Image (cartoon, rainbow, N blue to C red; front, top):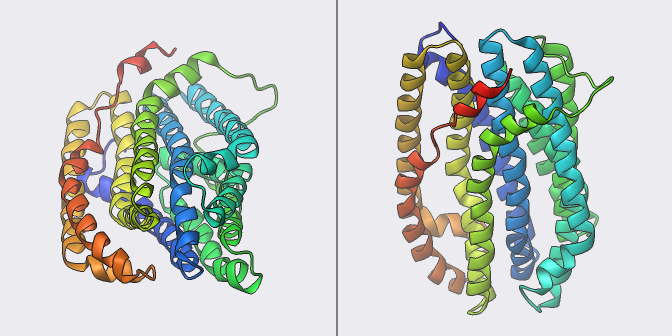
Length: 378
């Protein structure tokens, strides 16, 4: 972290995460491709559920950013006690987040859909999908948290194994649950949470066997308010940035569904497709954070600045490629989702227009981390 050439370090840290996130994006898209074969209403049910899924991911990854930053900085300062406290409190926060979303899923899944539409097929399918994804979200929360612990110590290659395994399981079981067992939209949710749970188990195992720099122990554990405060001081801005997207998507769905349900299907397809562009950038960001945090702790500002500049440069290049794909191949991309003539008519120009925003969103993916709160931790 402190001596390897920055460009080589950033690539070695980020590429495994980028690959694993691309695989994860693939199985999100595969979910929708299989569901679209049922009906456009089934695709709409999954599309309208996206804000809930995105909000859970926002909380998990945002908290993970805070854990990652504090843990890497502590290791850079050779403060191993604080690093272990950051890891244990991070897992505790993952459990608390799961409980909150599970309760919301039990009591408000149907309400979330009935306020958006009165189409019975969408409401029933969407309610089942969201309920399963939230009640069984412990796999997602623990998977992301334990992957961040691996990333904090530079073991990013293992996150490729965990996310890859989860994605493969999901892709294999999607058609089985959806079509063979005739579970429909609910089958897609079951396949998704199965992949997340298996990935979480593998991530926990890899941490216990391969991640010797930190030790996550809960005997005599008590939540540490100061550690949690520092985690959220860094993580909350990331959570808010990602959560705003959920609020925006929910609002856009309300506007579009007033015209036609096909419009909401197009928006849902867009968010699935954009993940192929944004996931590599998020992977780049996740690889960048521990580099910055470690070198901040080691008092090496030149390496920090070099890493940020390279990160923005690579992110812009990725977004440029995504822009070109959306401009040239929008009709082909929509065709994967059984797009009707009307869906193509409104979807092709929509994808081309939205993709213009990719360029400014590249630099927005790298907000300056608030280092000041770290200095308050003893």
